[in-house]
Length: 109
Image (cartoon, rainbow, N blue to C red; front, top):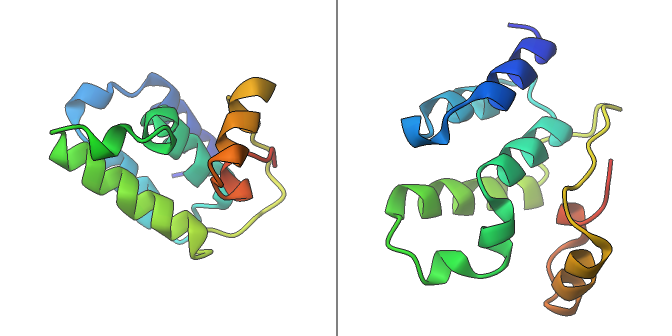
């Protein structure tokens, strides 16, 4: 599959169908940081960064998000020159910076 195909699949993906498809994309060696961040935010990365994972009973979501968060932090996904605009407002970014959320989740590529 081509990178553009992955983006189309993700844009149309019904997250109620589980995490199998996003996991396959993330496991592909051609998956880059822009796509990994897109998946993170499409899977409700905002809620994860805001601490929802600590309060939820959604075990599969929590495990998926925790794994993806750590993979992004550990540089599993490299920058490829593709752009991704973090879907947060300036105020949200400011609040997350105060909570010491790593900059990689707050900075546009």
